[in-house]
Image 1: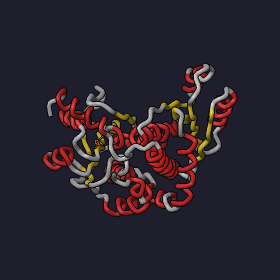
Image 2: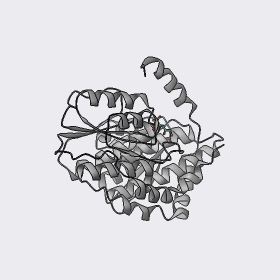
Image 3: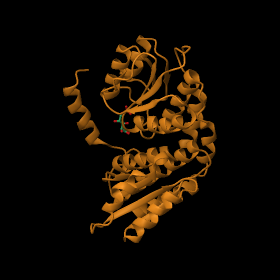
Length: 322
Ligand code: F6R
C-alpha cells in the first residue's frame, strides 16, 4: 500500500519546489481577455474552483469553471481556457481543449505529462509542466502553483500563493486537527457546509473523503442552503456528521451550525481562517486531505487506490473516441 499520508504531510516541501520550478513555456503576449474558463476534472478540476472564486473577487472578467467534455457556447476567440489535468490524459479535459482550440480561444495547460502536454507542445500553447509521480489529489499544491504561474504570466494576476508556505509548516497542529476530524466523522455520513466563497473547500473535502476514505458525502452551500437544505435537517433521518467550515467572522455560518445542532444533529465547526483566502483554502485542504487518509486507514481501506475511477475512465474511453 502506498503511504500517501507522508505525501500529504510533505505539502510544504511540495509547494516550495513547485513555486520555484513553475514556469510558463511558449509564453505569449495576451490582449485583455473577454473571459477565463477553467477546465479539468476531480483533483485537477478543483484547482479551477479555487482560482475562479479568487478571480471573481479581484478581476472584472467573467470567469467560468467547466467540468465536462462540453464547452459553453460563449467560450470563443478572446477567451482564455486554462486546462488542468495532472495526468494529462483525462478525456473530458482533452475534449474541452480541442473544442476551445477549434473555436480560436487561447488555451493554456497545466499538467505533468500525457496527451495534454503533447497537444500543448504540438500547437505551441502556453503550458506549465509540473512534477510527475503523485496522485492528482495529492499534487494539489503543485497544480495550484502551476495555475498561479499561468495567471501571473498571462493575466498579470498574483494569487499570493507564496504566503501559503507558512500555513503548511505546523505539521503537528494540522495532524492533531485532522485526527479530531477523522474521529468525528467515523460512523456517519459526512456533510460539508460552507458559504459560497468556501464552496471549493467543501467540495474538496467531499472529494477527498470519497477517494481516500471511500465514503459517500454531501455538500451544502450557504446562502442557497437556507432555501432548501435547511428543511431537510428537520426530518427524522439521523447518522450525519456535519462539518461547518468557518472563515472570518461569518454570522450565516454560525447560524447554520447552531440551527442544525438544535435540530439534534452532530455538528463540528472547523475554523480554517489563516489570513488570506488562498492560505485558508490551502490549510483547509491540507487538513481534509490528512483527515481523509486517517479515516480511510481506520476503516481498513487503501486510501491511495481508486479502482472505481479507473472503471469509469475505461467506460468513457469506449464512448469518446480518443
Ligand atoms: C485521483 C483524483 C481524480 C483525478 C481525476 C482527473 O487522485 O483525484 O479525481 O484527478 O480523475 O484526472 P487528472 O487529474 O489526471 O486529470
